[in-house]
Image (tube, rainbow, N blue to C red):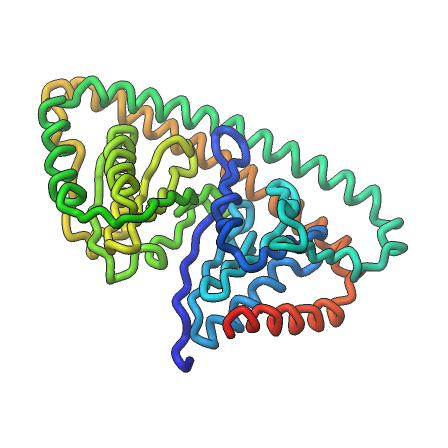
Length: 362
């Protein structure tokens, strides 16, 4: 294979109003996986670099790869999926602890603790404990701000819901259903759903890699407007229709409130629905939910809505600031681990794992 493989970039977990929310179980199906490597070890021991190097190897060989980014440091990886091999590598440490469910048969632990100098940690013990506590406190504090932002978002949703023309809304749903699902043939197989995040609340603010999820091959529908609950309900309904007809569906959740769906992908049908405005130039159809609102009712609450949205942004900005401080503390803690590591041994292990994964391609 000479051409580079396609790269899809997502988030398997996120910092939400509920705290850290994980969709790790959807990274790869336990029933379909040939191998799942759970990597254990502290910060700075090379887990993300290990996964990046393995991913790059297979991308350069022409295989499609998924990169699952860390929401607390979007430049790091929490996981890699090599699709053709049906192999995944996962960071199995907190806050997304992963332990083997089918040890030996499917799952395998890679323990980076085997490659560190245990004696060297004696001098770093107090520093590590102290930094861990500071990081925990900063994340908990940021989650309080995210809870506040979610409450404001709910206030906006409740106000906008009262302005919706229900007849127009129902007609939109029926028209989309007729256009996108009613004439689709029943596949004859069981449809499976997969849940992930297409964006995340990170130290750098809201980050997404939507262009790697919705490529040019997709027929894309873009939904606009602040009534995210109403949009989510439409996306969920259409997703259920495709699932009933036996198509696999990927549902991507809002990072602030994971109960809200903001992107739906049906790979087999090359259909994508999203609220991400980056898709404006790729969208076959743009649906502005504001067009379904009764004008005078909307006008009456516009000033209050704008105040709410401004307050929500302020709360999110403060949450980002605290998540950023937590990342800096995490970077400090890495300095306690890096000198203790024998990275040459990790590089040797990486070559062995690559060779083992290649055997699943044969």
